[in-house]
Image (cartoon, rainbow, N blue to C red; front, top):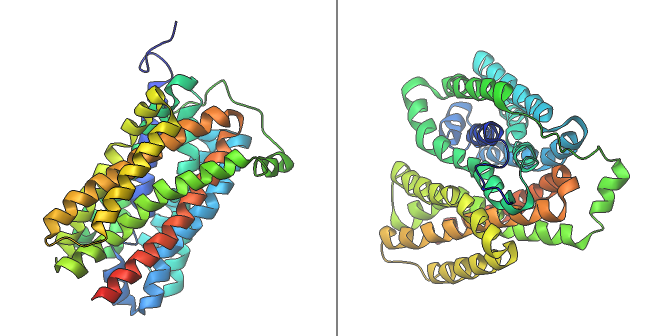
Length: 362
């Protein structure tokens, strides 16, 4: 007899994976909301500021492969502990010693890249506890941790004004330490873990065309989601003359909507299938983006289009990871890293092009 979702799996691990993912994503993008203050104090050029913000993203994309391999070799919980300790130490050094140069901001960005690689740990940690019929829901809940990016956008700039941007690094250690404690106590590795694979077996995965399809699917959904999220502040500021704070609130609303419905996408995929769900979400996003391309007279109307676009992409994220563990259950660690890296690279391309386009409209 098929168990319900809440009867199956391991709920403490699912919650721990979500919390670990959520707070990791919060600090992963921390340099973005603080970029204006940091660039002013360190006298960074626009190119240096852009590279500073991009470094955690690039590092996270590459480290997802590393963390995916570690997941398969030393199991998800230990891989997650390894990544969390590096992130905490990076923030601790930055807080205690300060960032005095552009090069030091890049070093911090590399350390924060391990937070972006949390994706490759949290999803396998949760996934291995759940049967195929509940994969979409489980991975949707764990993957909803990308909502952590909202917290960074909402709170980091204000805290920087009140206490100084360097002290924000120290403040971030408080929730991270709590998440680490919860993770150590409650997260458990599933007893149904596949054996570790050799390097040749990992390379062999790339010979499977389905692996490339999943990477492409996720590059569209998550790449589009994060690419838009990183550029919407510029969009609302340039086209509708909103101040940075108001533009940030509009962006946060859109990102929150996309993150909140990710589990919904997984649940829908569990019911009607991941491919059908993706087709519907791609169609909705494409139609709304086409309408958005003509420009709206007010920011309220623009926001009314952007929010459902982000929601459609967010549900698409959940649908992709309903498919991955069913097709690559034994290789879920490395596949999570590969698929996540594909999403990251497309995010850089889309975010850069979209931001440049909006700047040229000015």
